[in-house]
Image 1: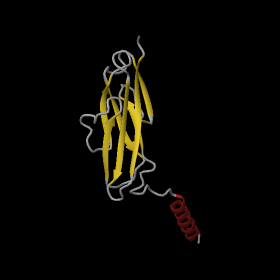
Image 2 (image 1 turned 90 degrees about the horizontal axis):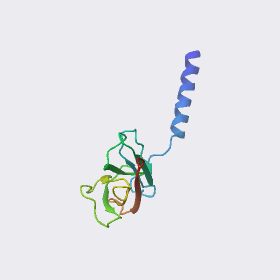
Image 3 (image 1 turned 180 degrees about the vertical axis):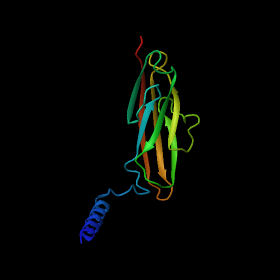
Image 4 (image 1 turned 90 degrees about the vertical axis):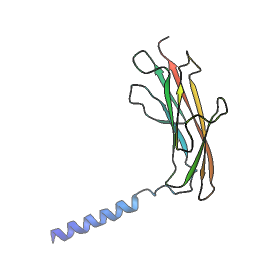
Length: 143
């Protein structure tokens, strides 16, 4: 009798867990799309949505470094990606049709310390389109 009660309780909890699980992202729904970024340093860099920043100090990172950008918030699907560098209105070299892009960034002392990328995401199955962007800042903490 105890085994039956345990089994019934386990089954009920499993069904409850299934009902409470969030629905997965839907293909074609680009409304939650965003761009996260981080500037690569020797620390454990964490991507941030929309704006990210890092500080250079001797021994803490390279200068120049790499700013990494990645599309988030889209479900599995068939997407096209078109990246644009908003500082000079060109397509960044090497980014192509991918959900991520990286570029060289110098600190604000040796360059402008900023990289702003925009990406146009197109769902090739539904035609839904969304443009999102992020800006990475790289500050000189030594001077």
